[in-house]
Image (cartoon, rainbow, N blue to C red):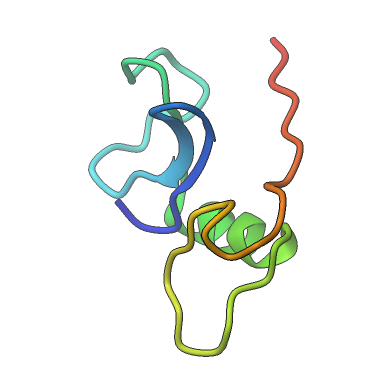
Length: 72
């Protein structure tokens, strides 16, 4: 899944290219975003990844993850 950002164990924000029903219940817990929105959010949040990286795990990179608050 493109532009994945985990925020609670195995629950993540990520791009979903296989449907267009955003705003509807479509997942088993993850927050599905359009690929364009997921890419923007991935680039907007911290920690910034080194050039050429596509993913990183908090702690491994030596920094804290971004705080994410999910509301209805």
